[in-house]
Length: 381
Ligand SMILES: [Fe+2]
Image (cartoon, rainbow, N blue to C red):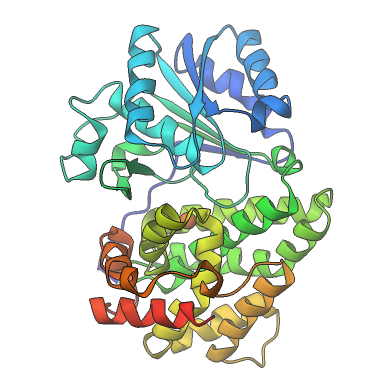
């Protein structure tokens, strides 16, 4: 742990049932003309987009909706959103949805101010100033993009998903409202919940972990162990939904500051090439990565095992079996055997999996051969 550590969060986080009602007042303090960035259908279908627009108009904020965000937003979508923001003279950006719309909103808010192309920044050009003020409203419980300063963007030319991070990219206001997660299907609940679990565990084990990030991450592990099964089994279970929304938020606060680990490197090439949603890819790879990390993280994995199972008499190995049991119980296979990945793709999957910054804070250093061995193990199921 470095001698002095920083801890950054959004300027304000609104958590709780009905927190979405705060969007009008928050937006009004940032400007009069908002760009609402959202996906193509889910939030429209559930009426949440209309509700947010009404709340904004009631607060005297004009809204222009950019609802072109696809799953895993491409650089072209980001550039188009930024063009729309400038053309419509928007003063702030509001993201609404899961990780994809919220990441897109963050990148669009940035590119409305920055020079050049978003892909320049995925290749190392420094983000040297804040974007337009950003509000992010989460409608899933997993990605925590309302909390973090990350955006994952698809470089469509190179078929690579790349994460970018900047201290300038924290939202001015984050809204985590469990009520907005009630309409998630069991499948989406499981996938996003496993993303939250992976954030919590990887943050806790990260070489960038600090006392505050560890406290938040371990609390999130416990909440997920206690609530994910129930949220998947019955989406109307308000206690379970609240527990998962809180877990996602806390894990986001943790990993925004600590960084993540090898799972969040390997999932990007697998997700892009085989169309596996991010959260599912995370959950499926977590056991194999934990097995690899075990020698470097025995004590911490013992704490993970205790939090996840609620039992004191468990050891580090039990963290892995507890994750596997949770996967089984929420209907997600462990490993990637069923993807039938051709053997000749394995070396480049391992290589592309090491590109992400997340790998740098993995508790055990990872060589190309190590990444390959982890993927081979996951491929065996
Ligand atoms: Fe994630």
